[in-house]
Amino acid sequence: MATRHSTAASGKRGASAPRVRPDPRPRPSLRRRLRRFLSLRNLVVAVVLAGLVPVTLAIVYSLPPVQPVSTPMLARWLTGQSVDRRWVPIEQIAPVLVHSVIMSEDGQFCSHRGVDWGELNAVISDALEGERPRGASTIPMQTAKNLFLWSGRSFVRKAAEIPLALFLDQIMTKKRLMEVYLNIAEWDEGVFGAEAAAQRYFGRPAAQLTPRQAALLAVTLPNPIARDPARPSSGLQRLARTIEARAAKAGGYVGCVR
Image (cartoon, rainbow, N blue to C red; front, side):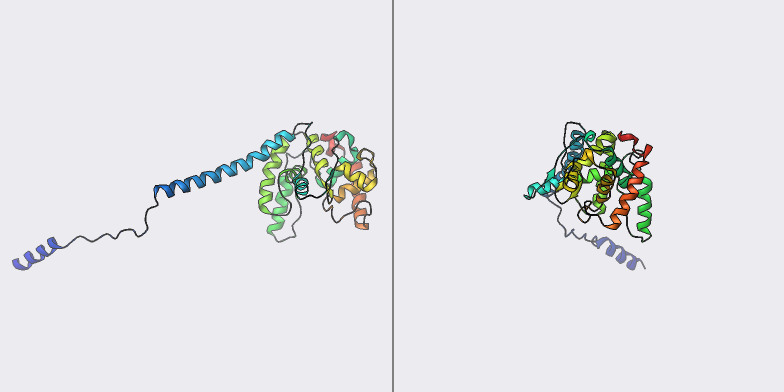
């Protein structure tokens, strides 16, 4: 018994410790880690700068003497296409056009702070339930898109549009926001702003538009390439009559731009 115990004990003492396998993946070198850090830092810097550019421009655009240009206008200039835009102050735009655009595009313009959250939530709920998507863009959101973003529908663009609209509404008066929007909105291919649109379709300045002409221009905005206010379809005529009636009774809905 003693001999067996002694042999077992000596066998345990002589057994070697288990070998640890080396990690087959080499540790990244200091140079590689530094390169990764710099790449991440450059990405963060690029994102910050991309956000600062529209913020800085928005502050500049809030100044009354400045006449902002839109990204569609810039795109046409850069590709050698024609641009017809004649900036006019809001005092030289017929009030009935201002009222018609509000009642057609954003009835709560004077009461919300850049985004109509109730309407936006309703649209999201409808989309989640599989219903056909509809627009929920306010005038500040459309202004932000025209000034800083790109055309087309996407969640990425909408996500960028909302904070920019909130910021524009904070730094601009409602009257200035409407002035900018009416001077950069596209009413036909290459035709930007109320003055150019009034001259193009009705041969008169924006200050002299009639209520029916103003309503026709307002209902053209959602689809300016397909709709012609000078030769409106029966459907466009019906929409214009509805907006003309609403603009005539707008009252407090348009008080912020008077």
